[in-house]
Length: 385
Image (cartoon, rainbow, N blue to C red; front, side, top):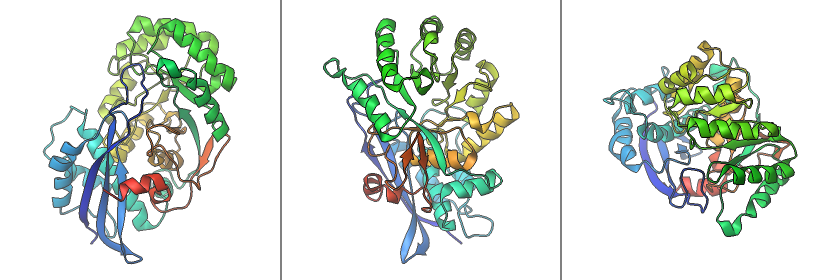
């Protein structure tokens, strides 16, 4: 019967001198962890690696005081045949004695452990995670070539404003076709100038998305929507407050651009309210829930099931986070694609060197699990947990 023998976590800095419309990242941290089992391969313990996504800081207290002790003391977390771990049983063990609701921080802590557990599950099967997921939840259909876009375009210090163009050209040189940039951290007139500078580089509005990081009230968001209509942008992301579904509905009705949102919704329940009351269109809009921030893949599978029941395809989902875990989910569950953070929030935005990026797509390898061992910059941090 497989069992967990140790879980170690650490807080890691991903500080960067950039900002969006709401926060700067000068003190940003994440939690990284490793889970060891009593199973061995090649004389070494099989380990699973996980970490939290950017934007929510490290979760050391919740991990050390609640989630990790509960998982280590749990007795029934193995699969039915005893040969593997059951992430759903692990999830229940970690959420024992937690009241419903209040999804702000514990969902982030649990998401990091969940990532490591799925890494373990796939390694124990000796297969890449995306193949495990496609066999379990997508009738064996998978595509190891994943559509990705480069998320960047942050606000630089005034003295370095020229770096926006340099950054965007760099993404195209890497092999990206689509990029995203921040808005809302300057005036509308200034942001229009910034958008036009990027459009001059990417050449087509459909290759550029903009992200307001939930900065605007409804009227300001509508003003931006009207001003940006002529650009034909890929999408308009998080125009209003995260839980202000009435305002979102107003913006959706006033905007001709697709709307993208969901990265700051941390449960299936909150996502359900978005679908019920946000006025989104399942044919054109995009959903960006990030499993690493929202109770992990176990909860994300529940969310996908809920979306399907409400007429949404997994093909409208583009997870936030820019991590390799998201690539496996996109490949194995039939998602639209995945975010990428090249050169930002390093090293956790890096992909394995063997994963070639060409014409806006990344091809996953056959490495077992998520494959963080093949990313030297990430593995150097994770193995030190």
